[in-house]
Structure formats: structure tokens, C-alpha cells
Length: 188
Image (cartoon, rainbow, N blue to C red; front, side, top):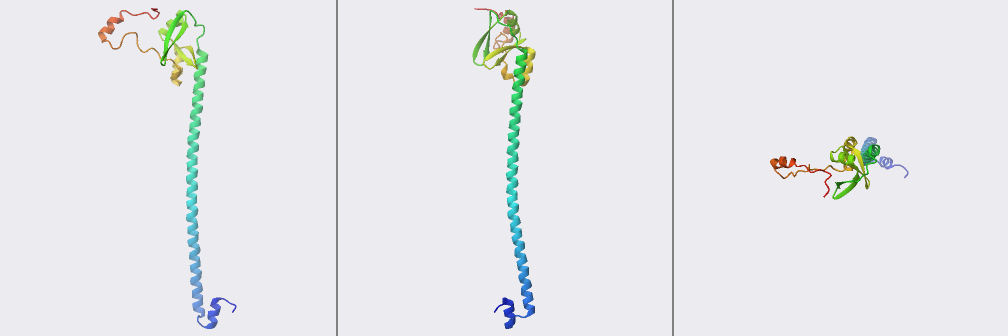
């Protein structure tokens, strides 16, 4: 009994040629459908994997973009700090030491600089400003201070807020007391 099942069934007379061809054709169509279904399932798996890969690539691209943006901001900040340092170094006033003490507030502490009369007058009328460089203080012109304010105003020591007249007084009292201005160089 060497032959296929169809050959054996034909020899025994249970199946004729017409039925055998029809069964063979149906089997062929069924195999074709199975292969198509397997291919579709494979495509679905491939497309799902492709979707996951695309999603991972998009997430990586977003992380890279954010990291690049952060680096650019850090570089811009470093460049800005370098500009401020260069402005201070090129515009600092030297030879201001003298016998007058100029007191100013830096945060919660009061600092003192010994300055000469000309510098003291410039500090009082705000034509000269004080800049903080590390733990030291540098005197610069008001024009340089404006340039620094545009870049980083935290380097500059804030100006005195009050004009010597108490803001809690009424306008009439302020006008009266304005007649009796207290000099800046008054020493108690």
C-alpha cells in the first residue's frame, strides 16, 4: 500500500476522480486561506512591534529635544554671566578708597566701603552703583549698571528705597519735613 490516501480510496472505489479533484481543490483553498490568515496575523504582530518601536523612538526624540534645550539654556546662562563679568571688569572704578564710610545693605547685612568724597557723592546721587563679584564689591558707573540690569540684575546691590522722608507720613507732613533735609555725610 504505497500511495496516497486518495489513490487508495480510488482503487477501492469509494471515491471517483471528480470527487477527488473537488476535495483536492477545497483542501488547496483551505490551505491558501490559512496561509493568508497567518500572514495577516504576522502583519498585525509586525505592525504592533513597529508601533512600539515608533513610540519608543518618539519618546527618545522628545527626551533628546528636552535635554538639548536644557543644554542650550545652560550655555546661554553661562554666556550671559560671562558678559556680565566682562562688563563689570571693563567698567569698574578704581582708586576710590578714602576716609568716608559708605554703608549699604546687601541682603540682611549692612556692609561698609571706605570711599573718597567724589565717589561718596556719586553713590548718593546714584551715578555710581555697587556690584557684587563673588564675595567682593566693585563700583561701576550707572551706564554699566543699566547694561548689567538687562542681563542679570541680581549682581547689583539694590538702591536705597526711601528718599529720607518717611512714607507713612501724610503728604502735607512730607512736604514740611522736606525743607529740613539731612545730609548724607552726617556722622553721629
